[in-house]
Image (cartoon, rainbow, N blue to C red; front, side, top):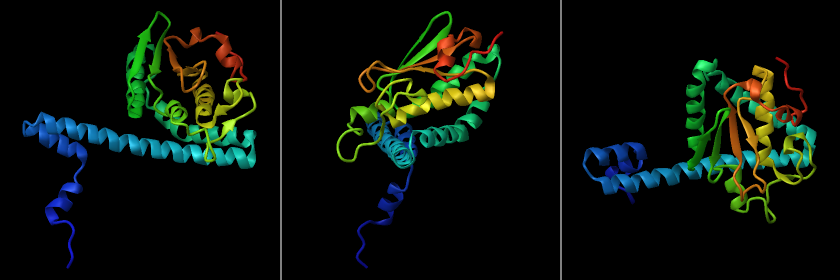
Length: 227
């Protein structure tokens, strides 16, 4: 039999990189642990981008074949399917605000990019620098050339009233609308960068939903609840 690998090599390839990192730490080999940590990052960001682009390619085809109305409906139903059960895991009530923020930021760390987080009296502001999903797509030229993903041309609700918005980025409005459906107010509000892919979008979490400005409901096509 013409074997390329021996069994030890096959067993080593089959190990999780995390287990190899931990083994290197236990063995007192920090250089190897650092090398494997970088390898683990490269593995995960590649899979992250694969699924991001797979989703974006699918949404692009929905928009091209069936138009903006169908795209927004599919986007909203898709967001509802994963964001609703996830948001229900977040503890409710002002006494749990700190925990909610920490849980949400933990999810954002899955994009594997650094964040700049600041707080004022009313809210928490989070900026990923750069955005690990839509922002990096734009930076990497995925909306240019013959194989470009879709840009939503017409200014409308799902584009924050802008023209030519990358289709991936239109999910933010859907998340806010689903939150209003479920809780009466958005949990996270996105302030899009002046130039997507070059500036940084800001995610805002208000400590008291009553302080969310009216304009954020207006752009959803809704009215701010009274009281």
